[in-house]
Length: 304
Image 1 (tube, rainbow, N blue to C red):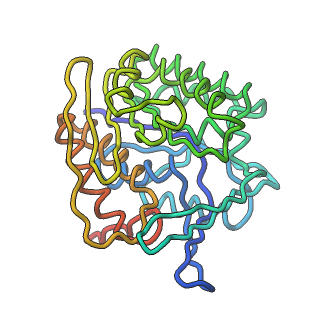
Image 2 (cartoon, rainbow, N blue to C red; image 1 turned 180 degrees about the horizontal axis):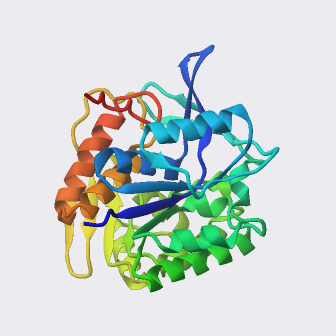
């Protein structure tokens, strides 16, 4: 059987997380890349991460870290003189995280710009599934978003599917209305929607998770999993809606990438034949593990 091919579009950054007030741990993460890493960890599929990086030592180490997690970079462009973005994570005593970004000149902002070769667009459209997020959209220029939409249309024309998580970060957008317009253009092309309810409420004004499901159905999404944090998730198709309870976690260390790990595990399960409910259970289990760990990514399992 031919391998399932998945491309994830976004930004991977240098991650610095506090081990102590004056000690930091170095890693490489970013929402779409986190999904790529957890997808590759959870299923035997071909995973490619599509972005732009610099030619500095950290960009080289970043790509090596991807390879160590079975995430490919064949369609990632190296831009001479460019540098990756950077962010720091601070967590409070409940494990809730605050991000501090230094990314205005990130190489990933060149995605779908005038210097991106057409061969990248063509390669993307040949995948079985293309994943992106609202954070992906937020780093693109309006012209680049238009080019991206054409790639999504071509992907679907060739039989591929689109998965999207709104993942709203207010600092990345001039206003919620602009975010809503950009996200709505993608949602009208989305097959699998993986939003977080708090984000949907902030951007679209949804009052309840059921409102989110109704809006996404109206947009044409045929598969929906609304993440509800400690309340679990709500999965839906065109006709049914099913609540999935969260796992009890006695000691939350860091909620960074909880949603990303959910998305990665959910997609992995669905791509390998699981039902929506089975996929949501698998995703919930992994997310519960992730929030007991410092930083975005769990250590890779030992291979024997």
